[in-house]
Image (cartoon, rainbow, N blue to C red; front, side, top):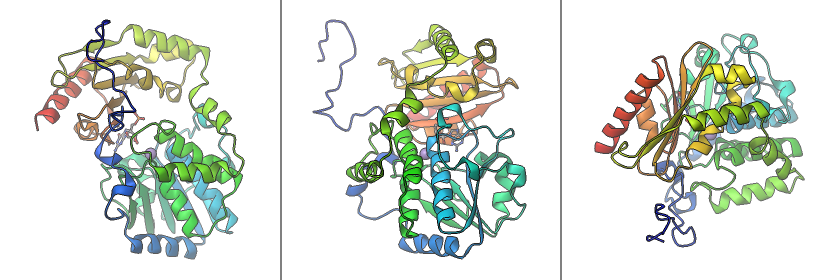
Length: 368
Ligand code: 5GP
Ligand code: MN
């Protein structure tokens, strides 16, 4: 392999090197090999008690929700409704728009706008939220809740909330949501399974990433046994896009830059998606979420970065690494956060300045 005549970097034979996945990080330690569960038993017991005693529960995920965040919250909403609890689902965007790729998720009748969430709710459960600012408009209300349960798998989770179910080794928040529902004794329905499967499939890159364990596949098997159509879910999540998206993608790839010397010589590939491109082709911000997965294919780069310009001229940065660098720490330096292998931030600088800051943080991270 090393002497590839095409001059390509040596490919890794996955049969020989199973750990050399494209998404390795400290959050990806295989769960079965851990000596101790990350979430103490008493935390689960407290969560079950709090949910069992509540009359009204508000289930909240992060702004611009992905399949894991919204899937987990909707699964819990459907489950609590089946127990007779008044459950509502919300996220702090205004307007509150469900991404087109997630429009098939059941339980959306439980969604209420952030403004309709009470100022001091009885019980709020947040899903896939690493820090309170990711709650957007619901930040203050969640922090004012009598009890705040935080269910998350980000290694960068900052410790907010009164009851914390945090497992950085969990491949998806949906895995933890499933555990809570099982402890609550909720029967697994088809609709709950669609939501949970969407969460697990999203965050494991369709069961590809290192954090995927035998237990993850066992969960998938339980979910599939309810009769869900994983082929249709997968097509919606990954294989469906507007023609306009293809044009925006083409332009973004055309302007992509490869900097082999960046990231301590491991390479950085980056591009920008200007607001004007999206406007010309009628493409919403959530539709370009998967663009990073194309850019990060570049074998010459350890790190990939896509800067997506919002209507207000700010840039939302999505970054991915292959295991040599902790992007959660790099993006924290830009006011964001996430996992070691996948992290994000928002920048109010111009694109060139933002990339320069990212590049510098990357070098510092590799030096430490
Ligand atoms: P994506 O690029 O898919 O939007 O985000 C990658 C990962 O980073 C996701 O797990 C997401 O939750 C996390 N993330 C993205 N932006 C932020 C941010 O501003 N703060 C924190 N703490 N995490 C973020
Ligand atoms: Mn997640």
